[in-house]
Length: 208
Length: 165
Image (cartoon, rainbow over all chains, first blue to last red; front, side):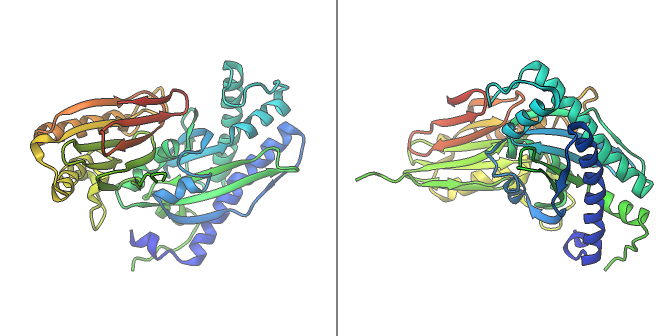
């Protein structure tokens, strides 16, 4: 875990850039779909205790809509795209003209549209990362869930769980105009993947 | 006078104990398992939020025993006994161990929920503590709360509301 406890500022900056490039590309894809500009907050890269990770989306019991996919290849990891159910409904309405009905449930049609949107966004996030790092990264088919944030996010922490009680999170938020479409990308590379990402980007990795 | 309920919270990969009045709670269980031990006579209870099945895979320096089923259950037992519980009266309940996402190609990591459940059960059996109720599996998250006085386990989920065990 030393690698993570003493990660220098500039390495954090490299990871921020990773988040920036991935989410930036996904934001461009979304803005093309919506024909609207999408803004992005500056990525946050933090080593967070497990408990604090669900706090980033409103707490362990907060109900969120999450698209999860496992990244396979040279630098495996977990990628989530997280939205509030309201934001997802608005996105569906804007994108495909779905009438916004019950806030808490999604029809089969909406579910499949969301899955496709997730596929596009996560795909563009990953493909830009793969281009940037020249690492091979392939996504699994995305899985969707509407549930408590704690229950969902804990799935992305299992690999870190073997090493400690915190995980390194690359967190990027989307904002559209009047905050109508908001979403957060969480990339949690497996602990072993950092060395590969740094090596691919020419960042020396010294052991202390 | 309104009796303020005391609530002890247990975080992920953590465990805690309570005695007398009050509730012990853990939130947002997905593939993790919430395991409770309760002595109805002494009114002593403990709750562990188990994340992984076995400490054999641990690569951390100082082992967090609350995180792994094989180490959390004995530790929880030790802590409730220290609070005055009697081992022969202890009963266990558990909830969680869901499979939040389903993939075509299910790897071992994806099956982590059921594996956590199996590991907890094996440890309980080894220690001779009866498992009297469980609400495990499925594909949804749960928040659980044990009433230390009655031993009732309340399980809340987004889709299914509240269930009592």
